[in-house]
Length: 212
Ligand SMILES: Nc1ncnc2c1ncn2[C@@H]1O[C@H](COP(=O)(O)OP(=O)(O)OP(=O)(O)O)[C@@H](O)[C@H]1O
Ligand SMILES: [Mg+2]
Image (tube, rainbow, N blue to C red; front, side):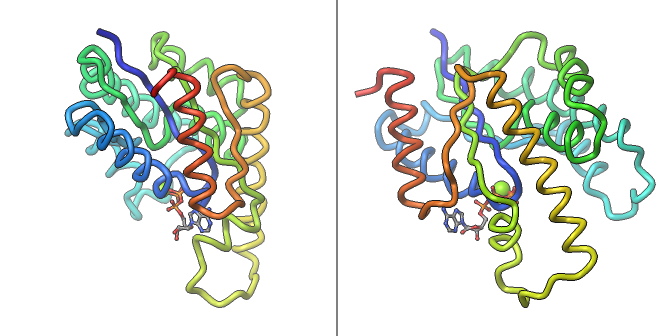
């Protein structure tokens, strides 16, 4: 039996975590709890969670961008071997909150390491395992940032402008990926209301895998 691997991508605030949990609920109701694995990057298992702690440790302000890219790739490798592949072999739907495209967009685009180099680096880590379907939630950068800082006052300072540029670089890298991998990556306009976005994603999954 072979499962189905679906990754969810998009810049900060696009709605990945919101959409993926609705999709998990929907698939669980259809096929049962055992049929679905919801997981996130970087993380999933003990080793990947330990790498995640290094990546997100506030003390590691001196981390080199290439070190960061290598650590993400290492966490991804372990996530594949311990979590994703066993679930696929058991015939499950694997829903991953971020996967390889996040590295290309954030380290390649956002941190300017180059999309092609980061893609190449990650080929070693993923060893051929690409998602059957990637849902890319596309959102204008201003709106994405607004969503994640909603409760804060709407004043724009220097840091916010830097954040905006970073967010735009990430989005542009995603858009280039979506162009290059048109069959795998499906773009959804995530500026629409959440229920609309969820419906569109459901339809996309239904069509791609011929679900009832
Ligand atoms: N379509 C939408 N319309 C309006 N608000 C939304 C929509 N989707 C998500 N939100 C809200 O925007 C915020 C960010 O959503 P969410 O955490 O799902 O995004 P994310 O893509 O997972 O972000 P991150 O990359 O930071 O994890 C949440 O407060 C969520 O309720
Ligand atoms: Mg999230």
